Image 1: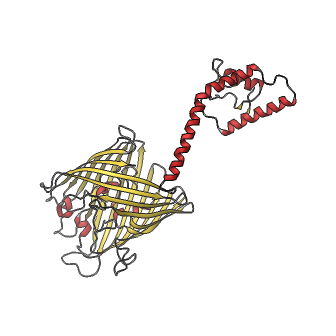
Image 2 (image 1 turned 90 degrees about the vertical axis):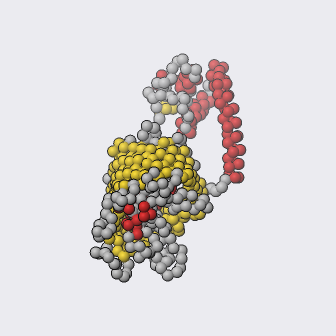
Image 3 (image 1 turned 180 degrees about the vertical axis):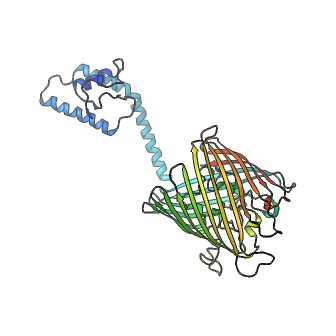
Length: 487
């Protein structure tokens, strides 16, 4: 910054401006304007403290110089006229500002007195869903369902988050062939509580230095909470109401293996690599009984490498080892229900306990601001625990799953989202001639219309061919209009 010696150096100040005379006097007679020559004066913008201090200091210096020289007529009448005009010009603004400040002081005092917490914020989501199933021989009727989530997020040191989520719902899945979990919608996750409130997620996320992030869940924990990415940037909403309609469309089924209580870590190796690892016990992690608890019951241990060469492209390699008792299906999210895949894939061995090894690859690519693609491929080897298996050619069974998504963010309007999902939900590979091996396909299309920052409306269609791997079963066709309120 340097002293302005002529008002003509201010490129956006004209002789016709009402403040021209005042500026000319301050610049040429008193040297009170300090700034950048040949740049706009920008008289319509707010003045920073530093700019004001620089100008004020220059004025004080000039006044001291004039006083030391005993200059006569230090303040002339023609100098006072612009000052008087400035006071008159800004009188309404000053009065309004004074009133605004006083009102803000009253409101601030009221908020401080009545605030819920200085560390906690409340985030809510309410879903209304009108749904029908069209092909199951009139076994299903149109339904109107709801799900409510209230999430209390508390931070103690600024970068940590304690999640306490309260949930209630009356969402119930439609009747499907052989009780297959294919086509499960995201608002069916953790099912029907008959609108009674429960704590369905209790977890704590915290930093350990600059590169390591920790995660502990007391209940409702899932792998998606702590892994660096699930590689579906637009359709993934962690089973919230602004992503894909189906559980299958939001993330790879490999993240649905296990859940409950436990923890995880993610470590960043520079800007392009991240390693995630975690262990989650099952729904009875709280019980001290035999075959329960944190280490003697159901569990799923995950390891993932995330590669991010750029902001547009991500690649992930994932491994999961799990143990499931006979009461829990394979893709269970730490409950006793399946949330994706055929009945054969989830419970091929009936009530027999199983151990599994799963391998997955996921990727996402943002091609343009309005178009992105993502996809995944996964394999799970299922091994029954103990005993002999009757009428099977081999003990180990293979479960496969793969899919691709097309996302169209800001379609027709900023905030909107169009989505297409195509793939195969988890299915059992060929094991014997007596087991159906027809391919079930998942086809999904939806369009989220963002009414405003708080409300969205998402109509969509989910079509499942050959449910539970059998062409003898009628297709599942679900039509949904989902309305989501967020606050």
